[in-house]
Image 1 (tube, rainbow, N blue to C red):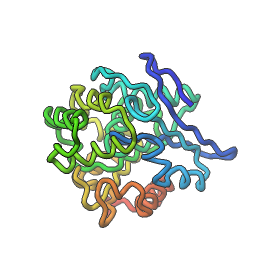
Image 2 (image 1 turned 120 degrees about the horizontal axis):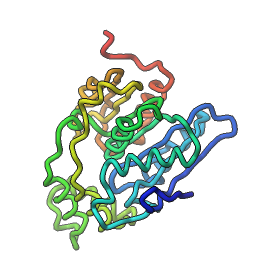
Image 3 (image 1 turned 90 degrees about the horizontal axis):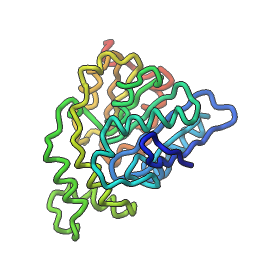
Image 4 (image 1 turned 90 degrees about the vertical axis):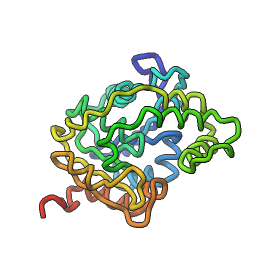
Length: 260
């Protein structure tokens, strides 16, 4: 399925709704991924189906089956967040749980800052305390260069090469991904995190390159941080312990580490 965003770009999505579902969750994938690779293949669709959730997942613009502009301004973080809110408006839903992973966590955080009344819970995966720091402007340029390199073997940085290989495996539009990384976003309003009213879970692997999830969780008024042992950025998302942390959090039984 798809809908047309307010700027005219088409956004593809899945909406899997059991007849007797009690709550809905919206999933936002990471950079160079898509809803099928980020959520279906990693077992999240099935996990939410077994829990009788209405599961909604979009392809972020520039990814998967969604529209692919080659203009960096099409990928402003506020525009990505607006796609999330416009999708739940399109579906006629008042409130959902919101779950982002990696770059999708930035989109989810921005959406929560702009429309906190629309989200019952916020889950940020694959991120840590480095989200509180401003990313250097050069980071997007080097990722764009990796996306546009004629020969991926010329990419010397392993982190950049892994994303390029992932994009190639998914058959993504690398020119659109390069434009995605070249947009000049202002820093996230991390000072506003403390004012968000919903419970927040930050979950990441022990070897996560984006920092400590528990340190990031402390920036929220009602935050929980969970570290998945032995996992890195890519292996944490399908892990059973990540799923257990998410469902314990949603069920309200995850221990609050700041209450000790």
